[in-house]
View 1: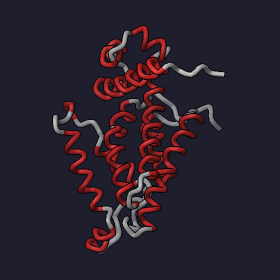
View 2: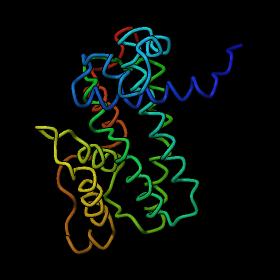
View 3: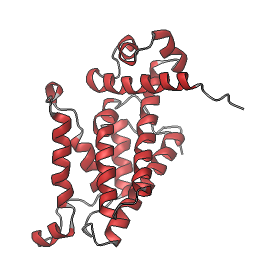
View 4: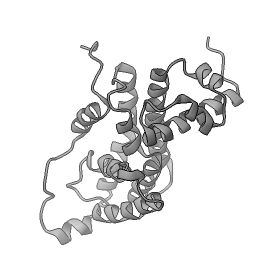
Length: 221
């Protein structure tokens, strides 16, 4: 049986993963691991005790990002909010995770193997439930499909050239509110026409994220 991780060790691991996400977004996945350790406030030996290699750390960042996304989606579902407000809560929390910056920064360095594919599926389910609930309540336009929501958040968290703007995070939340207003049924009625472009189902989203991070594990059937 695996020995439970001590609180201080767990905290160090969380700090390393958070710092690694920031460094990889800013400098790429080949950035010095000493910089990751410095930002995390730990020694390089502590980093290597938690992650034996750069590849292990990169994978750890991907797993942590998906797990955090699943957590905020579950919290939004559990909150006693109106369905659209639950969706709004999730979207803003997901924005703070910067998934559109973190996952592309790891492009080509990880593979969606069985473990990551299962974690992604578990992450997508509560997001789908948030969308379905809002539509059933008549609070979300009927022509919105699954991929519209996570891709909307991912686009708002893409890293801008030159490191972006100092106000970038606050602007992203401001712009998210504009997008969310467009998801309301009133916006669909005012438009008077169906949404243009492709329909991004959950299956389309899975294939797209495979391409973003570098594809599926070739060992899988």
